[in-house]
Image (cartoon, rainbow, N blue to C red; front, side, top):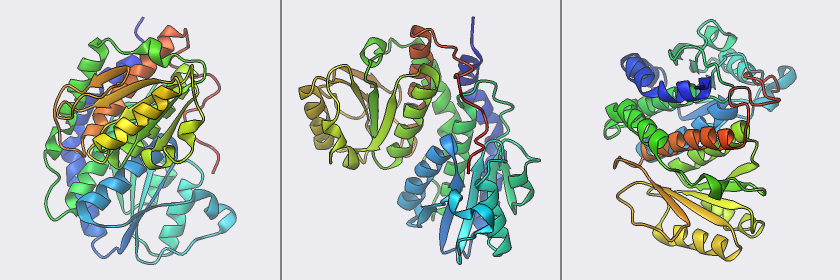
Length: 341
């Protein structure tokens, strides 16, 4: 029986293609709204926060602008942090997560220009924003998000592209690339036994791959129950790399920010400790001495590579969850909306 989670994984390419023109149009309105902003402040939770980390690196690399991540709990009980000069972005699938709503309200009180990205156009977040960019992917039935994450990332890429002096290279390729990787991943033989480990595994990324690493670890933990965590490569080699050993695994996301030397160091040290190692890499990068490699099916600009990795992570979560006999769509103990600020 096909799960809602698998159906939503499969639906992503078509949904992204349908929403792309409107998303790009609203990205241009966002550029105009933020024309005088000195920096960008992003409020998000959960998967949306992983997308925000992706946006932070993407905008920094493409435009040279500073993107800061908000601290929603500091806006509780009527407290407001001062945000002079900020262009504010709120990302919330439901549009009603506490903390995100408060950040938006504070921005409105201070006269800051606010953009919302949401799947709920009548939500409290949407009602307070100057520009609202709907995800337009329909309701998500599985607890673990898929199409809302990639639609959010697509919107953020459109915004980053609009903010730059020139468009992101191949920005119109987003939907077709996601569709290609979905078909590839669902048909591929993935290293499931290597990752079905008692002590869990760590996903490591760098630059635009950092948010993707966090998103993959979140999906694995939600769907499979395996204890998965994520680190930036720099942080991981300064301590946590020594914490695991046998019955644990490492997944490395290879983007341009991850040098061959750094990947080799990660693989060597983890292998020495008895960990299984998996590399997810684009085809233009050389092979590495990992226990398994997943080679993405197409070469892309670096900014787009993490989305291929995220799709691989979604399918890994689906396959590992099935292998472990988990209820794929319900993710026991989890709710769709974050209700803690």
